[in-house]
Length: 345
Image (tube, rainbow, N blue to C red; front, side, top):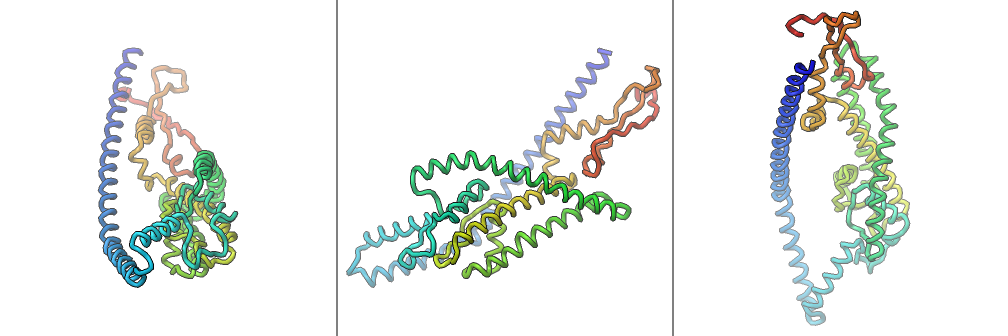
């Protein structure tokens, strides 16, 4: 028995090593593709935004030059430069200098503070309004350390519960369409339904609402904000409620906070449904863990003593992993009682 076990163990080690090398090669190819993806993206952004930035720079130079020529007898170039620096610094911290620095509500009202706290713990981080004091910066670090893991736990718990009715919908589709279509096709249909719900109720409709509430946004701007925010990219170029004349600004910010929390939860639900489909899960081909699962799947057909009591007879035990991957059934094993020939032994 021992002499037979050693070659099997060695062969298993060789197979495991091959799987690791194969996975590392795929990971290397993915890394190269990722770098190329970033390079191409950077080139496209530079080509699109570069000319616009150049025109804006020239416009600012013209405005500054015209202003200085008009009032150069009242103000020096150094004084003008210092004034501009103060205005830019305040604008970067969320304080607008227009209309004599007056607005309907301050940036750090309760509604704005709650909105800021939600962008910290969800890692959106617009960056338009930031802590100004040392105490505020220190508390922001402490708040993020506790809040981000807590937010992840909350999102995970919510998605876990939302998956119950979501899977019930999938099982209902199995019952209605299982005799007509393959499991994969039904899963794709299920994914499209969840995607449609997310796009309609958390992208298209909110974008229309923001178009009405934000006077300077068109529909594309609003849809762009919804996507950038729910994906937690958080560029900060569009933020609802930043208009100085925005009525009920605190309530508006609180409502946006709840929209972001619910929208991110639904996005995570959509991602979970997507990754439940093995054929669409690209990460399945790059993780070491999944390579080990594939190896175990290849070894699922193995020998075990037959229940007849005769030690010279064996049967093949086959684990049905396809049903498990599909998510339709719970884990189970199917034993196929087929005699093993002497060559297989």
